Length: 497
View 1: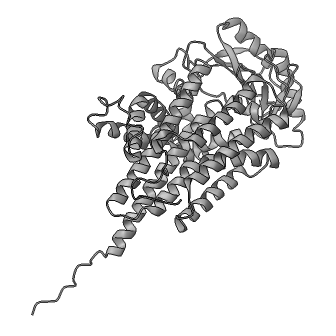
View 2 (view 1 turned 60 degrees about the vertical axis):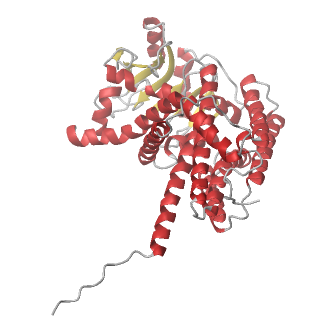
View 3 (view 1 turned 180 degrees about the vertical axis):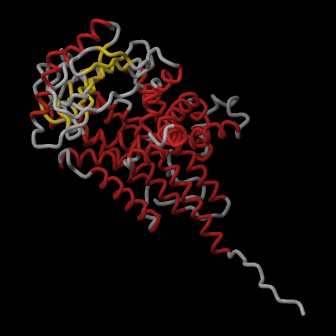
């Protein structure tokens, strides 16, 4: 008698449908995060100017002398007598983009004037919030940077495979049918911008992936070769620290250190003074100085607590790996060659936002043509494309009205979560036109309110306000690739009126 065997389990259509929905949702989430990183990257290219815009009423001094820098240490620490001892002291020297000196401890940061006196608390929390969104998505720094690095790898793969998947993409690089069917025009914008900005996009995504995944790489190297000491891995790039000696000592002589750099390396200009373990016998000083015409972020010159020169790290003339590591930061953030390069990075970054937005829209349209209901996904994508910039503007208002301690991170993520949940539950209520109108009005209101509140005529700050007005006009008019249709709509795909 043959033993009966149970029939193999059948995969029901409901399970398949839910699996496909989950797959689509994950793809949409990755696209949304890539779009968020690209958009915030456009903003922080000029983060120094945003910092001045956020706190325009701080007295500025284009130069901080060595004596004034020395005085600034004591002035800042005098404000923190009741706070925990700091393990690091940073003096950010004035630059052309930010002619303000800042002393930062583990507790707070203070602006200082040209004489080294405290001029006010550094409180550009909105700028820091946008930078955190771009660098680590406001997650814990290590895990956040690893995630952003992984998304950078994914975006680089999408860029390369997108070019390879279209054999005529280079031949048709200047063929733009912007006034044809919206779906066709959107595809042309996606393909053309993808080709035109490919070198920039690859450079930015690969350097961003390198920076983000360097944490994971350092941990792996530490586990394999340095007995799980990550600091030993970083020391091969940033130099060794002397043995710690916690016995009390006076503040280090950074004035002498700065004077030595000016005398021995006149072709450089200091940007940061870093004091490790201040007011201990083991303290030592690093002067980070930029080298004009070099892509490295700067060379680190080392000094002991008395201001005696002890050598340099070798970022400018050390091993090729060390020089390469020191160059990825400027290449990624566009911090070289001044304002023209910064404007180019912003333009290319906005193009990358368009490529990301249209790519996901085309994918949604393809799903709809295949008979899959994509209204909820389309509504969520409309919220991503237009709701994220609107939320960034609203958090700027929250910072202005609620002060530097306003809950920007919680407000942004909670607002985005609520908006996405509403779009998923009631997609028929999502309308791109209303979101665009709200964003345009918010941008105009922000620029006008800022000018009226501060009456500031400094060119760099005024340029930010004028840029907000220009952005409002662009959002209101909208590019021709989607004129008359919603960004989440292609043919039958529709998320709202």
